[in-house]
Image 1 (spheres, one colour):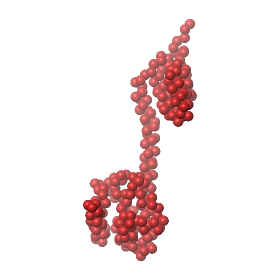
Image 2 (cartoon, rainbow, N blue to C red):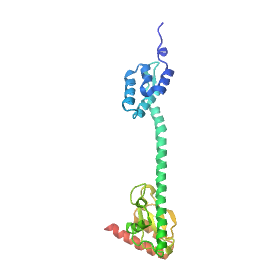
Image 3 (tube, rainbow, N blue to C red):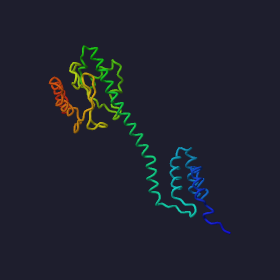
Length: 243
């Protein structure tokens, strides 16, 4: 008596072979799909397993879409399979990326806090005075306090996104002397460092340039001395941007 197709090729055995030896095409050798079997075997062996991920995807397609009882490959099942694969691989990848970005933002905040500590130390050694130069010319004076150069660079954008306002002193307390430009990873927000060393995150929607942030800080300044200081800096930054 002749064997039926189902007796020749068991779907359960096909799946078991795919799980156990799919990377080497064992299930397709069993089902008589020799071209696919050789392709999977060579892809795994010749790449020394480096392209095993591609082979694994083809094995999943075989398990999900091929029916050895009839020799039918049901292409319409590829769409839900693709959706499942995206969920399995994309979601963890997005989670890892989000965690990485969060750690970078935390490092950015730590950099600013570190600069704030250095400014307080500088003020303690210079009768309350902070470095007089704006931006790099002022911050470079902190190198004598062993502040690493990478602290001056935003770890997320890998650019110099920090603005230092020189010439203040620690007695000005709530006067902003340092802030992060609200671009890149903190769109609409800025971290402000005050003369007394305190840090604060402020919402500054619609403002991107240093002059625009200074205009906002000037309007919300705690006292007239701070307003006057920030006004002078804003005018200076506006003039520099026109050059």
